Image: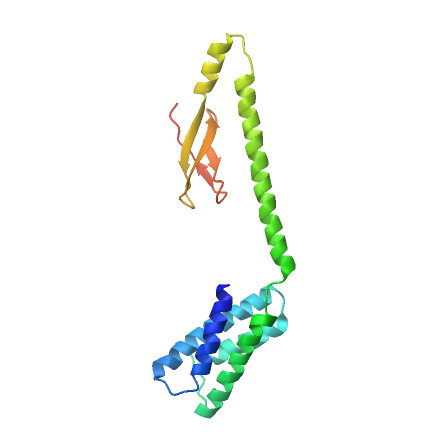
Length: 189
């Protein structure tokens, strides 16, 4: 979405470049168009659109702000309009394939399902610990097991969100449900 907006802004700046502006406008135009088309070339290469990769790469070189190419004003006007048309055309012709979007969504759904399965297994094992009997009386046994299990609020070291986990005496790590970061947990028993 940001890349779409960036292409629209670059194309509009190119159209306005036909009029006379201060030199700073053209310097800004070079940075914007070079940046947008360089990223566009990278994006096109990542989705294996070779023609778009070459076209956008050439435009990025042409608008390179560090080693500017000097051309006449009339010639630049023609180039600006042509490249604005190319950028508008890229809005329609240069898109991420739907199959790739579907694959990413399926991968995210799969990870969510695995997380839920892991959570269910953990809950089952905790329930098994609480339900199991020992040689002592049931009340003392449950009391002792409850002391070896704690619910803990853990701040994630990556996304900084806080989440609650249930840990046994022998566990000292938890996985953040928001970003899948493995966090160390310090519990005083």
